[in-house]
Length: 181
Length: 116
Image: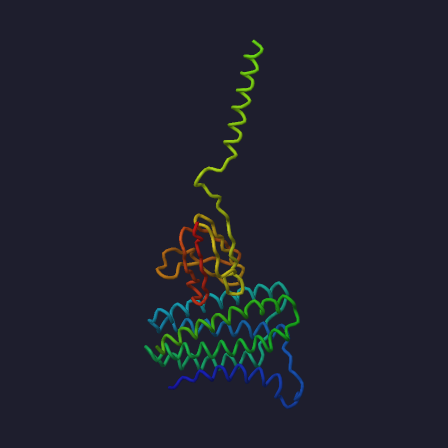
């Protein structure tokens, strides 16, 4: 089975862009996410990357890949913890929505593709997906979640997460280059 | 007698002055050490490059929402260990060092020891 990293990129962008610009009934009108929906998307996106990291820890023996995967698990869990603490404080219940559901269904496909790979092929597939996934998530956070969040603390948390995601991307690209060697 | 008393008083006075001046004068070869601060914020060491004198202390404080560490880069000769949000770690600098966060390996910093 061939891994298609662009699946993730396409999914995140397509979902968000679709929701924002392309829904026939709301053409020309930006669809908006509520804070509860934004919280759900944020938590889901973080959970997905933790799962990818766990798969990498099970399957890879490459020190750079393992170090990266470990950082993803810890950082994204840290972000989830802060997001959960914040929504609890605000009394907001994360609300599943078409975006978070689509993210999960696409991640399930990607998990299956990753599990079918081994050795160098796995390392490449994992890190290629991480590069694509982080690019997509950065775009979504910057262009949709931050502008649309209503609560100042939620917006602030998303703004704090952005440099973390950008550093993850830089780290992933470094490992990707090293693997391509 | 009066002259003898005056001489004694002057001698005592001079001794005090000598002691006082002696305690205030800088000790040869002894320099005052400073404490410098590096903040870890938005996934960067700020300042990323710091010039210090040998024996100065550097304190790193993590202002980010994720854990970081401060690790000597070339041979991992020293490390702070994981530093949680809000945590600080300090070290006395004795030589130049390139350091990084071993969790997020693209985060780098440099310590330069100024020649005296």
